[in-house]
Length: 460
Image (cartoon, rainbow, N blue to C red; front, side, top):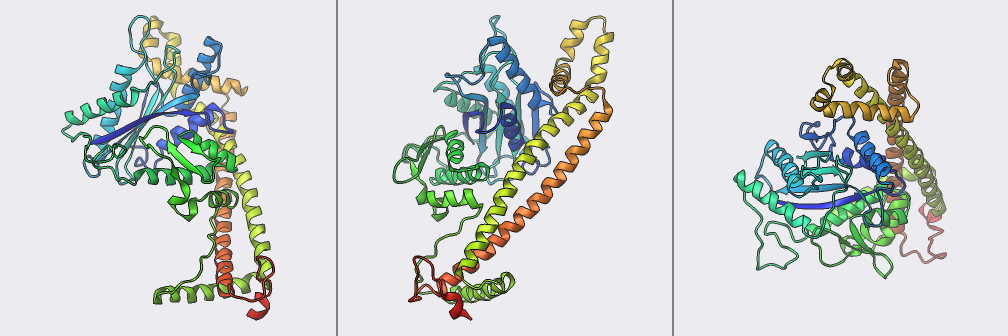
């Protein structure tokens, strides 16, 4: 049994089309989710140059058609499909085979056709994620075909995808999805958890918070997959394609998903909950509070905290340092992406140079090109990337320089991440101590605004 969905991917806010393609493919081909890349398949493009090949084809579309790939009719540059299997019904290899066949058959049946009736070929990547409870396939394909026409979806496209998937499942002896009339229509499939929509929203909120620089960018990122209701009293989302019928208010997902908490997490990288009024505590809760007080005493001594204002100053300092590190890391990540594109292009040139040498020596050049179509395209895409940067494909010294720069930048980024993780750990420790002191002196009679300004004197 497998459920499916299909949706478009637009250019991410603050990013280029090529970086968006890189992010999308990098996510689905994550080695930790695909057993080191074992369950990843590239079709009509090469693994080392897939990003550059897709970007080059889109650029050719813009040059030939005389208009940008993102227009009033469509804001997408890629399409992505997901096929998710029932737990423990298939093994990893079978799931990946099904994903490859699904991509092939769906694009054959419902993709565009040339004027002569032949099928349009699309560049796509199939990746099977085996690290989750439900094994699933991600299929991401270029919205531009090899004939420089766009893939056009309509309201029937998701249904057609589901039909192809169900037919494949039947061929492999798997069960198929059947509607359950006794359930609410929005919970159409019998084995889906009714709360799965909330789980999807929480995961997507967490993902977008990590990527967003500010609250507006967060809304823009969520808006790619969700209808956002941000102007009313409560923040709410409804998915565009997965069957969710009603808006879900984020405060119902938990305190960490309230609008104020989301803003705090974007700004500081951590959620610091407001302590609730203390109620009757169990023995284990009291023991936990005692342990927290001992840890707090160590934090006060280590950071020489004398009063409440010291807490605020230290937290502000850590938040500022974290923001500076995040800015530096984003800049370094963009630089690494550019370096990786160059190094991958040099590797592709080296790999396919013998094919190009054979083309020069071939007597039947058209036949040779047809036999080595993918390799020649990969070489030309890599050469175009280097040419745009004013680099020579035959300059081995430049290749070594870029490889050294890439290694150095990657090592530097790793160190910055370690510093950032350390700051977040310090911030959580300071925040826990602050919450503990606020709880201890919550009933203090002397209060200045919202700050218990004299707790430090009484604590000594």
